[in-house]
Image 1: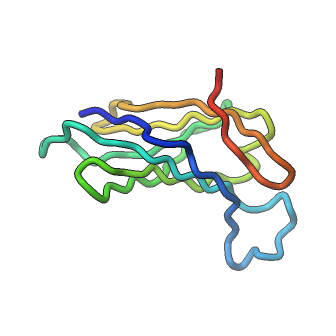
Image 2: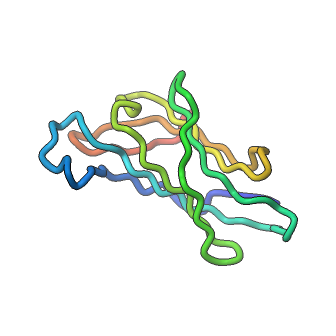
Image 3: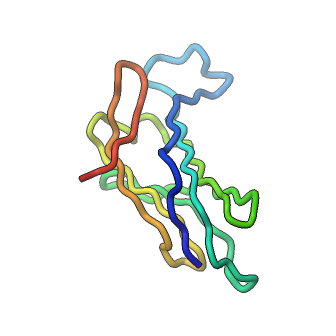
Length: 119
């Protein structure tokens, strides 16, 4: 099985409904990464989405497979794990094997986050 990224990550701010009036430092960064899944067979396990921040513990995301080849890796990352210039490593695993991995650098444009590929 192969997994590859097929577009740029979609990045936005996300807040809990009860925290709509929270201070600017509160909330989450939502990331949606489109991926393509190829050569999947029935014996392949479930795809797992995972992220690691600079020096942090891995956090689980959500892997969504809608069609035979189209999928998305969806993450809701605490904002404090996304400092300016910090790095985030996104992974897709199947049967505990990393099949796709990409490192991005966090960039803030005013109040809005972006991800840029790490060099």
